[in-house]
Length: 552
Image (cartoon, rainbow, N blue to C red; front, side, top):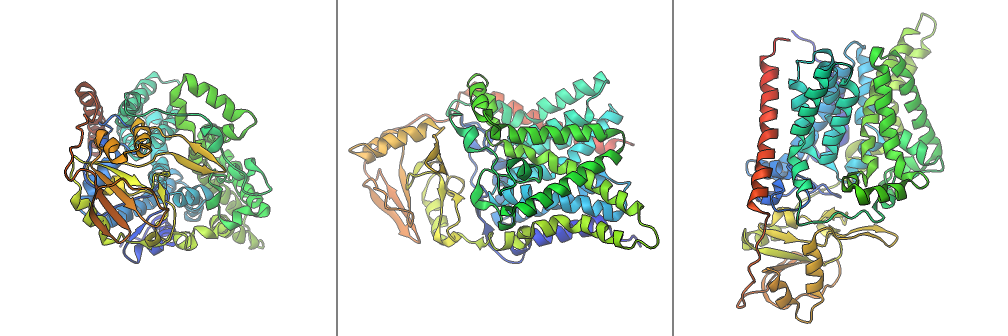
């Protein structure tokens, strides 16, 4: 009988400790950008076909399809659990020659660190999934360099990473480049083809977007890494923390002593890279690049430099939250941690049993330094359920209708039924048709990231019009959804079609006509984007087929 895998046991234990409260009951974790709904209707926006910026393309399309099969709550659980299990097992496979306790140290450091905590608490679950796929990207990259003809694993992992988010796709390409590229030209052109093909799903919608504009005014400074304690910004980032949203920083990270101890853990892991064989320089380069990228906006003059460069190179707007690109450092530190624990174990001789305590400490240190990540971030993540009113309203709105959501003050809400936690308004994902919310980002301290959708600017003007109902109808708006309990907005006059459980749906055109507004992009653009999505899908299938038929 085959013995149970210690890697799986450790990974499942870590996953249960982090996600436990979500798994033992119903409802959703709704926080920050983490929005799942019972059933997400299909929209062309999920593939970027409407001309909007590809914020979650094509992940929203996949979630929409999945919720037509199983409830959104089950989709959320499957994605989060699957991500953590894949991450833990993947990083263990990166150090297969190490003993089980060394692999356990790699698993705990990779899955349990401030970067994971902060991305979970800010709700960036898709970016977190991309991070948890990085070990498999690294394995595919090392295999491609060793066997240039074995491109299948790299193809699959690059496509899966790009499906998570644009930044995840970029990080995966970076990991592939650092770990795979060498003197063999065959690897270069194969890697280039795979990188381009895998990222077509979001890259084509981004470069051809017509219904949005990207602003970079002040965003690099607003989203720059922050010091969590008196230890400073560099110490926070080196220990995998330092996110810009200081309101979610766990209490222990405000202690300079604990941050410095976490830095010590990082330095020990980096020292372990010296034992990681011929790839040690590549691992060091990958970690150093990630660290530098996360710190650049926080350096003196760094945000101003990026802002000036972004005026000429709009693609740099992808770096506005450059702290997310610290993710590869977590992978590097996990690999180094395994080798550090092995180095300590090799020094254990009869008469020095205390070194076994050091080995155990190497495995448990990430948990001891960040206990707040346990059990739903120690109560910060409480389950919530949508009131029945949300389903009732969704049944009244048609797939061709346009809805404006009030209050018109940013796109994050603090519902009473969601424990007043700030969460991205779920209306665009739950209601059919086009749903417009104020997409300005309010960073606090008076800093505001302007709206990127010109339709939002038009609605802002319409709401200020002497006859807002007529002005909205002229923009093609049929419905106004008022989410009560978060201010007292002025509501345009119309027929109240629904009123209950915190929602009021106002029909602006019970008798008047709504101006027909042509939506979506040019037919030629839609064809181009469809070709891009098809190419990425075929690349995924081809890579999977290669893996299944390969003899190696």
